[in-house]
Image (cartoon, rainbow, N blue to C red; front, side, top):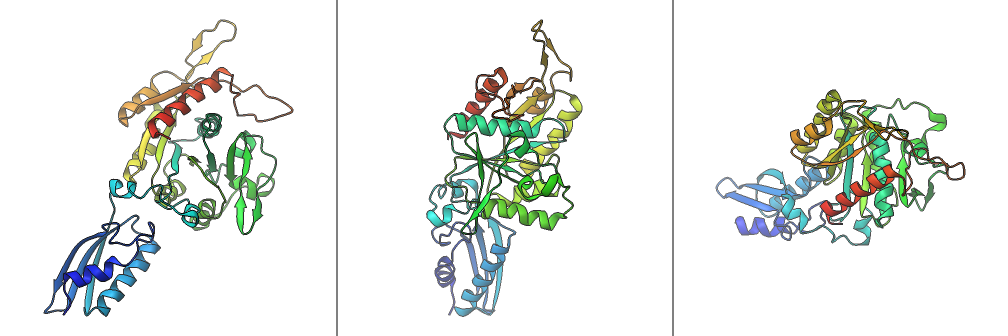
Length: 352
């Protein structure tokens, strides 16, 4: 006759589809209830990621093994493993598992760069943070996930395209950063008119089909706002720490709060706020002019209960015709030094 121990034994041999460890190893069997007279079994299971196709496949396997053990009907509930439980398995990916960026086993730190609206310099911040982290010796990848408004290749002065080797896309490397962008796959700056499901497949390719190699950080330049693409990314990746970009203007800070709230609602954490275009400093008088007002970054950080990572003044990189990258600040540029300080804060906060 079927009993609780039999159920735990047969279900415990099944593997968490994301951790690739048995449910016995992950302590993923939360509870088992058996009604012998009705030959009904109810189980509650915890896995690394819920509401996915992988969960559905596991659900069918659970029903199959429990019925094979003698039950006539099965009820299943799923919940997500708590962060502390997942943390035990981070960094344990084998070589094949390490190629799956979305596996919770990877020790990669995802840093999402978000904003409430366009035009606040989110992509500029993404590019320069990625470059600054690479200058500090970190292995960095950058996904230009702003599918409709891709700009990273032009900002970084990238003129070559990715190549495909053994069915894997090799990202373009520039300033020590491995880059992938929708801009590489659209001819002549054509507008993207695809709908949500197609975009989701592209994003999935960026994560699964690109040969990133070993990474410490993967920077995600998210689309502005809280639309479908941003939501898809939050649901795809195991976890991320989000940096919210705003200008000092109260309206920009107000709408940026929505992007931060979305991160929290999807179980991601907020690393901090960056206030871009904080002031303009005259080269003649060295006086600061607060052309977009003051205080937006500080107020946003307070509202999101996080810290202000830094303030970036209005400026422009020094361009070079021989190594043209119109949005990348040199290491010794005053704004480049500001980005380096923010990158170091991020390293310290993530302990990478």
